[in-house]
Amino acid sequence: MSSLEVGIIGLPNVGKSTLFNAITKAGADVANYAFCTVEPNVGIVAVPDERLNVLTKMYSSKKTTPATVRFVDIAGLIKGASEGEGLGNKFLEHIRQVDAVAHVVRCFDDENIMHVAGKVNPANDIETINTELCLADLEIVDKRIAGLVRVLKSGNKAAKVENEILQKIRDALNEGTPARNLNLSAEEIFAIRETNLLTLKPILYVANVAEDDLSDVKNNSYVAQVEEIAAKEKAQVVVICAKVEAEIAELDDEEAKEFLSDLGLKNSGLDKLIHAAFELLGLMTFLTAGPDECRAWTIVKGTPAVKAAGKIHSDIERGFIRAEIVNYDDLVSLGSINAAREKGLVRLEGKEYVMQDGDVTYFRFNV
Image 1 (cartoon, rainbow, N blue to C red):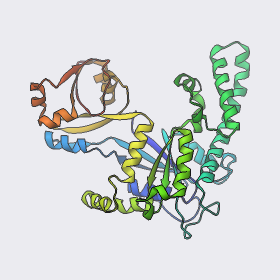
Image 2 (cartoon, rainbow, N blue to C red):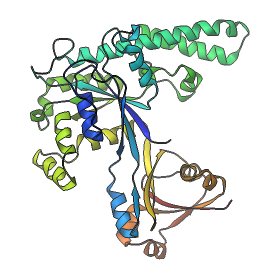
Image 3 (cartoon, one colour):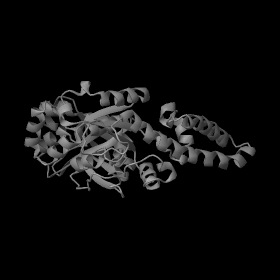
């Protein structure tokens, strides 16, 4: 996997672009009217990882390269988008391209910021977007099922399997149930991969609250609505204040830490959002370190060493001999790779070794 790509979606004026500006410092236009965002803005954000800073100092590295996340700010959706209302068709197509979806839900009152439905109601907002995504997927599923009719007559087994899965999905979509809620197996998802369904995208909800609510989220009834819906979908909820994130974006690291401390927070909304996205997609990072560069590499949990080597270069995967690995905590506590070797804490692992988060790795290879 290259850089993780997360689409930021939601109704107009829920704080998507404000959040996007804050976490990417990319300067996307923000305005108090629907469809301010037409083409998606894309920003690449470094994944916060203090381990890289520690290793950079230890190795006196010339360069530090963190893992990254691509955030895509997608146009606000309205009722009827699946039929082309507003910027519906463009909006839906942009969602198909991302790995995961961060659905921003407005959880604050502000008479100066209009709401497209006239009032703040997170449950209705979520239902509106889910309905439009379900309707868009339903059209695709119906077309695919119709296209399988002739193949089914020939007795094609793969087509039979695909048709059965699609029929099950169609029934759910007709009930307004996203395909991701069906708990399809990896084999079933692979069988229908060509449909690239919107409602199969992994999702996390971002509850955008007022600054005053950050320290007392439990008493925000809007957030409670979002959490109730997310619990039914087994989805995560990240509570942020886009306005606060925008203020943090203007500060240097030390000022940001002090600002968060004053608010009684340990991590910024960006940190929470990135970590939630990694967890949602089952991702982790391994590390490489040396005098030239310290770098974090994003891989899927369960990746064997030989495939992790391929993340760096295909030649390293092809000529893989061994992975020289030391646990990050062991390395830091001993102060150097040589000290870790003397303690017998540097291991030689083969192709099938399953990489662990934070493995500090050197790949031996020959091509």
